[in-house]
View 1 (cartoon, rainbow, N blue to C red):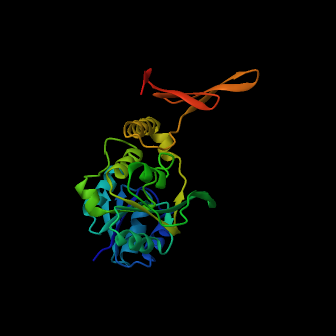
View 2 (spheres, rainbow, N blue to C red):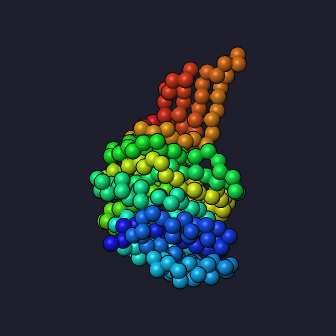
View 3 (tube, rainbow, N blue to C red):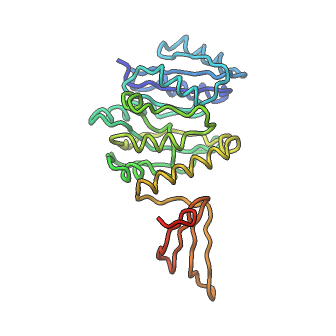
Length: 283
C-alpha cells in the first residue's frame, strides 16, 4: 500500500533537483511514490529525472509541455494513489523521517492535514525557522486551524501532507487560470478540513525564491484580499495583516492609529479599537 504520494513539479530546476530527490529517496518511510512532473524544462532536469528513475522504481516521471505549475499540481493529484499526498518544490528538501513522522501522527486519528516546522533558506544559509512546532496539537475549529497553521501570515503548501480522500471529496484542485493560487488553496483546505495536527521534531527546508512575487504581483494581491474576505466573513479570530499603518500624533503622542489595506480600515484611539470599516461600510 502506498502511504504517501509525493508530488514534485519541475521546471528548469536541475541545479537543486538532485538534493531534493536524494532527500526523498532516503526517506525512512519506504511506502511512498514520487510523482515528478517535468514541465518543459530546457536544462538538464530531464536527464536527472531519468537517472534517478532508473535507480528507484518509486519515481514516476510525467512530461508536460509548459502547462504551468498549478496545472502540474493538478496532474499530480489525479495521478496520486497514496493515502496521503504531499506537494513540494524541486528546489527544496526534507528531513529523512519527514514522511514517516507526519504519516504516523496523521493516521492516529485520521487527520485531514498534518503540518511540521519549516526552515527558510537564503542561498546556502539557513535562517530562523519560519514555522516551528514543539508539540503535537490538533485543531478543529476554523480559528484554531488558522492559528495552528499561522495563517494568514504563512500560506505554505509544502510542509504538510493531506489525506487524499479529503482532497478528492472536496475537489480541492488548483485554479489553472491563476498564476498564483497557493493562498486561496490553503484557505480552502483550512476551511473544509475536519482537523489539522502539528508534528514536532521534523523540518521542511524551503529555498526562498522571489520569482512568484515578481511574476504574479496582481494575482498575489488578489489572493491575499480574498483570504482577508474569508477571515472577516467567517469571523476567524486571527490577526489580519494590513499593508499600511498611519499614526496621528498630538504633541508627539500617538493618539489615533489607522491600519489599512485595499479594502479595510481599523481605527484605534489610544490603542483601543473604535471602529472597523470596509469600503466605507461598518461591519
